[in-house]
Length: 249
Image (cartoon, rainbow, N blue to C red):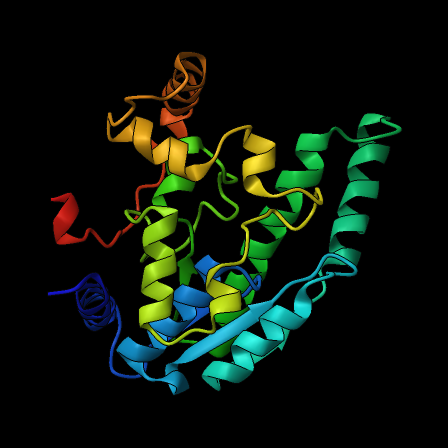
């Protein structure tokens, strides 16, 4: 059985055991490969009428047209909730409370992610009978490149044990446009790709994780190992139902 067929079966089984024939999937749509693939996967497993996409720009999102394109391509119900007022209001209140003039970069990255997860659960509550997706992949989990209780939260995780390149192939096998599958992953805030921020590629990360480092620069290998080891605590906290393909068993 292919990863696609296994993943479809897993999502279907999860919803059968944790809902009913009407339970919906609520998915944060960023316009990137992960959220696009999860949305397409849930459509294949549940039918598009049970999939809801939520776009959550923080003010202006330069690539939001990709998110809209994905929703139109799949034909799914979708909402746009701009979190800028919530983010700005919360930030003002926190700064006033602690007497700070500015907030650190980590706050600027993590707080929007946590507000987005709160938004997804808000939509799920209003829709009723819904489960929220965690869209993270294995490469991000190993690198700790996610926000605890932000994009690291959710009710189910369909991509948690798939490397980035496997997500790309899964997305294409589900019929997604190549421009969405091949899009360089980014946080949508720093203006840089994930790999720019990390200082190494996801391909290098996989090579180290699978102990296939022949020919790799020793210093880079050590840097990646330290990153994986240092972020292991975050990965352990992702205690939610995760699809595990047979190739990882």
